[in-house]
Image (tube, rainbow, N blue to C red; front, side, top):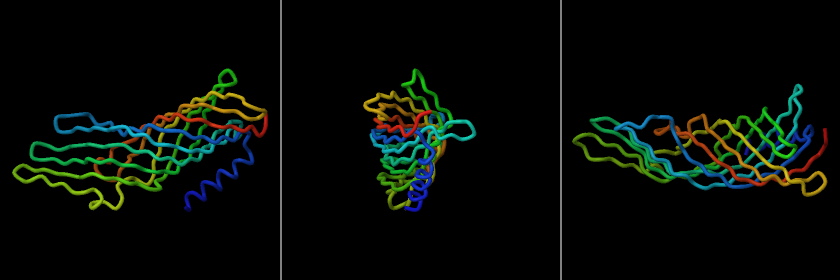
Length: 222
């Protein structure tokens, strides 16, 4: 609640200096991934999952001659994770299905308009974990010993990292529907740079595709 209050207070202060307000809603397709190379002893499988997102955005915040875009959002995403690692004498692995809800803050310093209708935005998104649910097992094996599998909910009180950061890009097409009002079909992409989990496979990251609709209100003109 404290994180939510601070974020809302920050967003409210920026509204006073903005020219456009936007409410955005839609779906996301998340896929966890990692940068590790597949080997005979290491394997990973990540299955996509469908989630949703709700965001508030403010455009054209002027700072030292540059126009910025800010977003504040609530998002739910998840997926399936199967990762195994080890050597000749033994190994370990995790098999889980996980869902998360996060509160995110996006800052976009690179903003362009194409043909007065198409918006392109590039920036950084930082988010904090609000809630998580997961089910699955963590297992290990050793030569000459029986396999051991432990329920993840018994092993961990929390499996996900608290904070995340990634690169976010957005492209939208503004359709004017009334004076100072527009609808914006849009696509966004998020590439996570931080680790999603606190334990193996902690090196897992997230990439997400968004398909959304925005309703935009113009408060002022240049």
